[in-house]
Image (cartoon, rainbow, N blue to C red; front, side, top):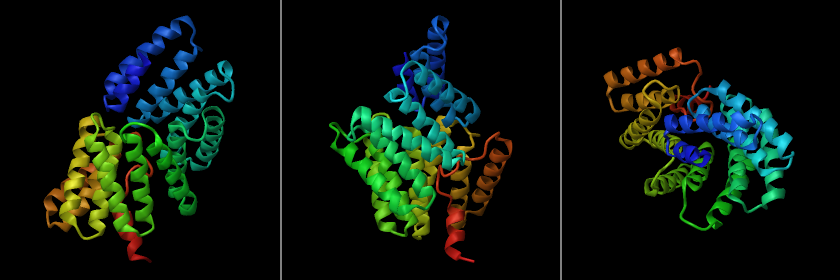
Length: 304
């Protein structure tokens, strides 16, 4: 049952995943609320809530699962590492980056000792650590983390999947940060190719990659290509999260900038107003670092 919930989550079916995971917690919890199976379902349900912007509920579930795994499985079990990693991602998205680094380092230590360095789980922890370093502008630390993650995943048998695309997207963002735009475009386009060939691409990764490629096209003077990417990113997020989720605000704002570049001021104003309304009504602001902000990049390029 938990595996089915995880599958639905990866496909972007948050309602279905929530229903199944809540049911799994209820059924197993009737026997023992501190059961390891309950903790496993809790950490997956926490990820559903994190993507939906229900951060308080997500954090509570992650912390409960961590306590259970520590009590029942010990402090060096790989199952504990998954919950630690998930909590770290939540903290990154909500701006608690110092605490996130210690969680990821603890997670990496557990996974490396228990699973070996060439495990896909290790790769995703390295990917998250690289993302944290990039947000902190620690670029010399970020690139080796991303490259090692990519090497591990590409050495794994089977076709490239959303995990490879996620790492490539992060390498694209890092290249963009460093002004290596052609290299960044290559990474984003390779990531999109993998996602487009996937039977069930993870919507959050697809939308994020489309948004960031759109921003890059805009910065390179390609507003038509930018608008196409941002339009698709918006459609992906709306289909998955609905029309009023806080994650849409950044994409709407970026598309508004591009629409103004294309002299479509009426549409741009509509997007700006919608983004403002979403953020005003949302209990949470847009996820920090979730998508690249075009206005912020344009401002930084102009200088003081």
